[in-house]
Every structure is written in structure tokens, then in C-alpha cells.
Length: 468
Image 1 (tube, rainbow, N blue to C red):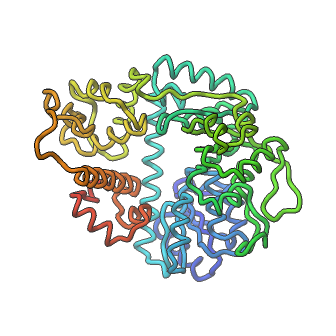
Image 2 (image 1 turned 45 degrees about the horizontal axis):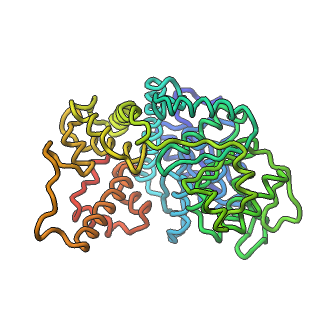
């Protein structure tokens, strides 16, 4: 029986010396350590017992570290996983971070470094739990209305979600980028009879076309060069649950026909397999494209469109439900104050009005980013009107905008300023996600540490402002 006052750590490592080292380090740090020697056993152990964190080697017998990571993230998305590698090739480590690893370490293991990374991972998970608890208190659990807002449009959408969630219909969710399509997909899964099984989300535009078929359908050993062992695809990992196909309009035509066969036959055939196997999943797809136009232009199969659109949900843009802005802004402020540990309690007079007047081309995602930046930058206990307006690119004063100036900016200057602002925004978001860790942020941005350090100096961004 696990000791209740010790934190439980699972180490998946086949090297005996590394096993002993990990056990020695973390036993003295107050952890209860379980060590297993291969990937399949690690996945089984993580499924059978509760752990707060997993340390996993990249090179393992049976399932390799990346396969273990995929399966752990499919079954327990919130479980922090730290990868360990003896390789100096950064590609596997970058892939691990993209698949959801909290961080990765290289051998030989440094005692202080591995303890620091594990403690940061546990702190991040504790903060996430606190934010989830706050969301529940603010919004009555995870109800869609609490997440998206109390407007009549959202309430009508929530009623539709409840209605169709009880069925086995394939659902197509339509809406602009950042409007909340993924929240709708999560609500469909949560309110369905499949809620105890995994929800596996796939961004059809983020996976290279050459890898997409293997990612979705899996492959058998020897199916192609480099396929040294069998690999389960995302569809198989969602067994009994829901597959969310985000940005379905980006799916290549060749794979559209294969997806159609899966939807019609409910059979899954991995790359290199001689026969298919039964597939028990519910499909939800989403897009910001007009698929009917893509059908007319030959870029999307009409039969696949009608198969996906057994039931269609339309997510309204934020500008069409401005009464949700205050609810969302306050919710994002409360969450950011907890996550960023800032003593910000609300908005000053006029700030809400500035938010409500904005057009929100980036929808709810844009609103969240603006509020988080405001919480990070404000020097007082409230976010002021001028701070909001400055973040929205408006004039700080209440007078009208001036007309064109003689000797105004050139097109090149406008483009350079826009690129600089976009670059700064991307760096801030990466630092927020990495909680101020510049090395981790550099990896997420696919650049080297030195380049990121130089950019921080040029843009006047301090990494320590994003540290917990």
C-alpha cells in the first residue's frame, strides 16, 4: 500500500545504474519511488496505480519513450511526464515536448537539476488544479455556459450540445478561430456516455502530411522504413471515447477517403496491416472553413462532408454576443491572478466598456490573451481603462483618433512594427507556458537559447516576470 504522506513518482528506465540513481535521489527528497524496466510495463503501472509524475527514458525495450508518452497523455492528459535521454540529437526531445512532455533532461543526470524540474512540474500541476477548482467555483462546474458566458446565444448552444451529446451522431462544429469550438467538443464528450474514456484531439493542420496517416491510423512493424515496431494511432488510443478532428478542412484528399471508410465501416486498418479491426469511437470535427465552398471547388469530399455533418453546431463569434465579454474577462482575470500569482482583483471603471467596444477579430482567445497580459503588467490591484485600451491598440486618451499625418509611416515601417509586435506576443506566450524558463520557451519556439536571449533584450521582455 502506498504511504499516504509521500508523493508517488514512477520511473520508467531500463538501465540498472540509472534506476538506482533515480531511486536514491528521490527517496531522499521525500518521494515514494516505483521503478519499472520497460515501456509497456510502465503504461500498465501508470494505469493501475495513482502517480503524481512520471520520469521516462526515451530509449526503452518494447514501447519506446515517445510511444509511452503518447499513451500516457491519451489516458491521463494531466499527468506530468519528464523525459530523460542520453542522446544529444534534439529532434526526439522537441517531439516529446510537442507531444505533451513537461520537460526533458539529458544524461548524465544532475541531482539538483532533476529535482528542480520535478518540483516545477508538480508545482505547475498544483496550480492547474487550483485554477480548475476556481473555474468550478466561478462557473458551476464545467458547464458550457460557465465557460463561454451567460448570453442567450450560448445558452441555446448549450441546449443543443446536451441534446446531441446523448446520441451517437457524428457532429460538425463550425465557427471562427478562437470562438470556442474545442470547448464545445469537450462538452459533447463530457456529457456523453463515453465521458469515462479518452477524448483524443487531433489538429489536422499541425501534423505534416507525410506523417498524418500513421498518426491517425497507426502502423505495423515494417510498414515503411524506420517502422521498427507497431505503433497505435490516435484513433486506436481513443478506444471507447471521442476523437476530435480540429481544422478538418486541412485534411488531405487522400486521407479524406480513408476517413470516410472508417466512418462508414467502423473498421480501422493500420498502415501495413492486412486486415482491419473494429473501432468504437465517436467523431467530432471542427473547422473555421466554409466546407460547402471547399466541396464546390473540389478541395473537400461531398460524401465526407455529409457523413461528418450528421448534426451541425454553430459557435457564434464574440462580437455577436458582447454580453459575454464581462463574464469572460472577469473569469480570465481571476484565473490569471491565481496562475501568475498577481494581486489583481478586478477592472477599474471604464475598462469593461473598452473591452465591450472592441471588435474581437480573434474572439475569446484574443480576449483571454489581452486580460492575461493586463494582469501581468498592471501595477495596481485593478486593471485600468487606459491599460486595456493600450493593449487593444487604442488611444490612451478619450479624444478621437487623429487623421493621417504628413510624413507618416511607410508600408515597410508598418510591416516591421507588425512583425515586431507578433514576435513579442509569441515570445510572451511561450514564456508564460514555460513559466519563465527561457530554455523551455526557446524549444517551444524552435529557436536556440542565444537567439531568444537576444530577442528578449531587443524587445524589453524580462523572463523573470513570467516566473511563479
